[in-house]
Image (cartoon, rainbow, N blue to C red; front, side, top):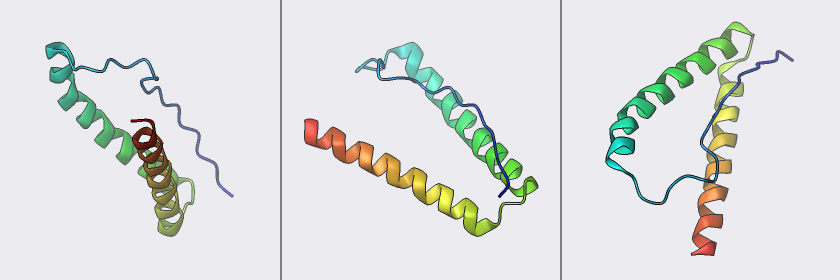
Length: 77
């Protein structure tokens, strides 16, 4: 099975609870970065022989992980 190695550096659990004005101006840049990252991951996966179904499976797994995170956060509130 082809392998994709992608290095991501995402914010940790130490994110501030309030968004400062400087941070709010960075959000559009982060949105743009996510779009670029998504296209890069997709392109790399296709070049490494992954089929569209496998890419959908990856996306589904990511959504599942985020959903679990959201549910866990809701339980803590």
